[in-house]
Image (cartoon, rainbow, N blue to C red; front, top):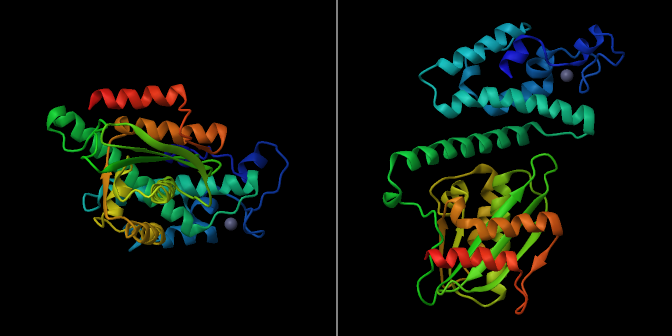
Length: 313
Ligand SMILES: [Zn+2]
């Protein structure tokens, strides 16, 4: 991306015009400004707002100017700055990409994205990315039997039920689905289902909403002692109060409210490999629409997945 910016390869309007295409040359957001790369990424009021909201330390003593090359060099140099955390180094690069995507969404899909949403999304994506880096590091450094986090499904203690949940989220369409399955101490499924989730703007939000649906489904079945298990470490940390997420505050409050309805409740993180039943349920809904268990018919594909989990434990 940086290289493309420097080499002016991004086909912004003014470039397309120099190549002989006849289109409007002004920015789709500001009718009076020519749409150059520098304008879209740094000078457009929309871009300026995104940069300002991001609060990035690289702009504390610096301002972007009219020179694309200067601006990009500043970002590259900041990436080498040893005083910045990995997340602080990644934010500017990620923002460039997201600002460009937002411009395309506006031009091609007539979709207006809000600057604050972009910043929140970038923060969540970077967290998710750093987390996956940490996860792969722990899994290579520590022998499998010493790993603290479960990567295989484990039965809950007697009298406790375990509910695994997962979400699916399409970054392009923002369509989200949630899947859940409740199992007893013998690994037998009590109920399962999947459904579409509405008003979701990030993968993290989808995970939180999938958990809420799972909690409600457990509650209406009258079960009181529960373990909820999901594969988003960020969400589980937030629910357990270890981290605070500004974009999740309302959802965490809802989760707290539903938690108070149970006699005992635990939120646990499991690696994706151990959460495959819920993962597949979420995926199923994305292709076939809402889907819920009845006491008699358990689809063969689900039976196989559940069996695989039960054999392990
Ligand atoms: Zn503009």
